[in-house]
Image (cartoon, rainbow, N blue to C red; front, side, top):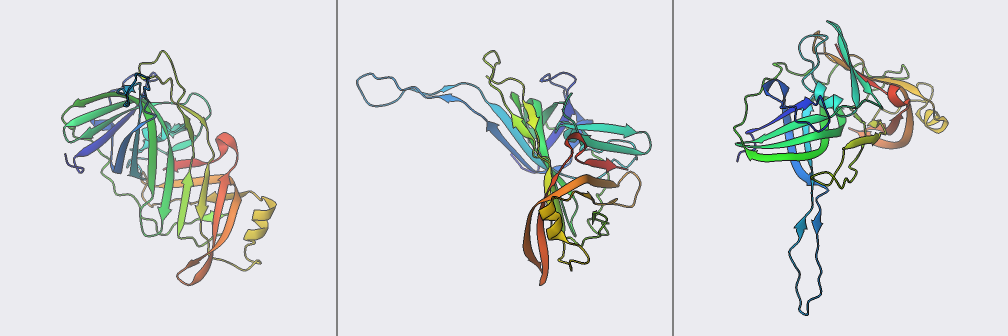
Length: 305
């Protein structure tokens, strides 16, 4: 079974853990797909019967975990959700659409959505329902920005099925060059930016559930990231003072991309430094900065325009 003949289709559920039957229009262009059984329970039996040995174990339920990475790009039309839009929503992000203008994703703490995921593997299909997850964004100079997703859900079915023909957005993502990154209004020279939701995905046990697990929940998050500015004189930017004082700074990538319908912008209104160390970039001294995104449901926004 060929790795290149695999496909992910993901659709937001109208009701939790009810198969939404994702189809061709719900396909996502992905790479580095992974699948594992999460929280599998095997009951070990240790009866005493006058001789050495063990009885067979008993399967007592499992969840499933799916991981994949997708390019960050627009849909091609401003105001139309990007291909990864439903995946972002299943990570606890609320979607706001302004017709013909923008689609913005921000953290939410209530009315969180779930997804059905169909994972096709060259003639086999695995269904995962009631899935929720987390995502990490990475943007490195000279590459394209990517979003790495991890979803946990109920393993609904494993059956033979022909792979569908996905309908993908026919766009190339903008490269990570000419990115107007600023922190507190200062145009720092960085080579990479990473940002993660760090959602806490919990899987409560349920005696009445067929797999022994109740609703997969997002119960907390800790949005944070890293970047690596070139070291400056204190008069230009006092990184250490900001770190020690817990100063909050507006962090933004600025608009990435030049074509309407294929532009995006990540903004963290109140970023404060958690870690500060020194690094080396091709012989130039850098700071390695870890930051937190403060502000609960206003911690950040990811806008496609």
